[in-house]
Image: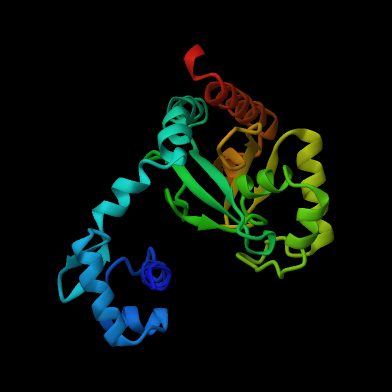
Length: 254
């Protein structure tokens, strides 16, 4: 019974999006596929537990209690907090958006990159990423860097699922993506050019294996016209990945 309630509560939480962070009970019912009567009962429980909060016009939003609990995750308490000074240094060296992402892979075919940290400035190129946002592996720099850490069996299953076009330049052919992954392994960093957002370029590198944490990668996103000097940007990103790996593995030495 408790398991069923938990699953239904999660089905409600999953329907909130960047575009629709506040929803009515009817919208929650429609998007989750749950009966409206069940949704009303869940809302009462979730409001009491702080999982939902009330918003204007009879709408609901994700509650502060979930944010509070989420901050206890190792992704926040260990990885992101340790990463912040390294991300700031990378931003200061490049002036570009800096992203930190981890691999979320309930199964390889469903895997994606979850952004756990982001630093940007007024002069940085606009991006669609946000902390907590989820993006495809094949179309993002950090995603390709994460793919380069996976073994052949994992990649085989991942590539068995269709790769969606994010822009007209997204790489959706498995053979071409495999070549990109091999190139990233050889060079130590991955790149994208207008594959997630037209006009943008990215460089990213994977961190080393970290105990208790999923695979992670750090990268920058810049305007294509300003970022063609790959030889300058790639070493900065790779050094940031090495420094951050060392900092997470040996926190007492920092």
